[in-house]
Image 1 (cartoon, rainbow, N blue to C red):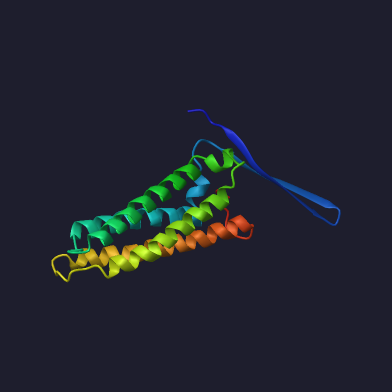
Image 2: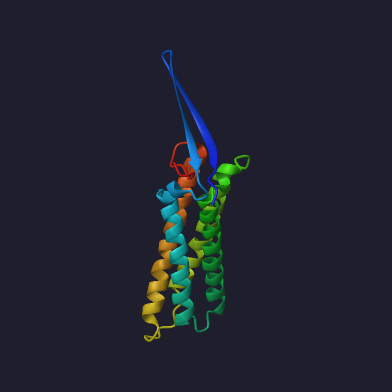
Length: 175
């Protein structure tokens, strides 16, 4: 494998006649620094909670006559999982750094806010959609808890992306 170097940002700070310069350099094909950031951990939480919640809700089949609720939750869980996975992989392989002409932080904020909105609707639908069968009650409870965990992760991710876009928060670029 070939190693590549990408210069991502140069910061110049000038205070009382003294100039300090630093630059962030990305090496390799995988952004190992991104894995350690809070936005990356939130992405993993989003991916896992969407996947396990989807499995629990659909395996429990608790929506006896609520097929529309289950269908909406299936859309939210799988599309949210895929969206989070795509953005995680994009950051992992330096795509936002290499293609800096796009407003990645704004795009990421819009994506996180959109899924937070969908999950604000979907998580309560999952919570109120059970039939009362005790055989599948544990799966429904676990699926519901994880739906709200995913909701919280998307809201926090949206807030972090908004702060990063405004320039006052966490960097999602792995620094």
